[in-house]
Length: 216
Image (cartoon, rainbow, N blue to C red; front, top):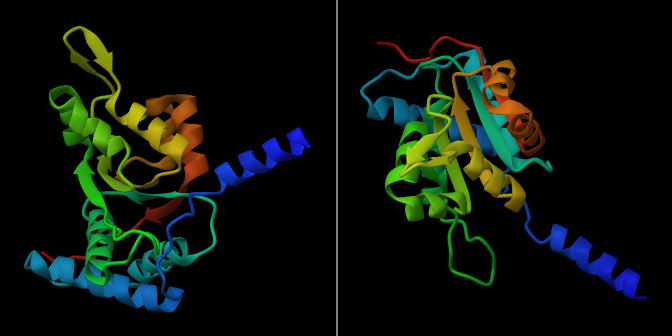
């Protein structure tokens, strides 16, 4: 009886945090995402250009945002200027616009903080409490993952801003989005087996193979 009770409690503990999903169909999510991307591009006085590659990327992201997946993170990989950050900002605007409640018991609304990887490393050294708060944000996007120093020194102590943050978020199943110019094959040599394996477990991947969808 005691073993059954313990097993039941452990199983309940593992399943208490439900993965975030947008409350829309995949088709509606594609439409809303494209509208958000278009608005972000035009906000920078650029011309939005639709393409098959962009539609494919949008469909893949929409599938991840609405589907029944166990992963609780998303990595957007590709070269410069092809829309990775724009997609994250579009998603941020969707959350802000629709004001989706976290659950029925609290007034907290879903939102996502976007922070540059280099800034994250700097904050770890200059404002450790702020860095700790980022570790536990319900939703966090890290832009330009791979451009940050792997370690920083603080009064003789070696800190590992990105790897320690990702480890915390992995352990707690916290919703995390990364944008990076690294290929999936370049991540393991840079961050090591432990982080690479955890990223594979926690994150879906969308490859941005196009050069750019924005005109000059």
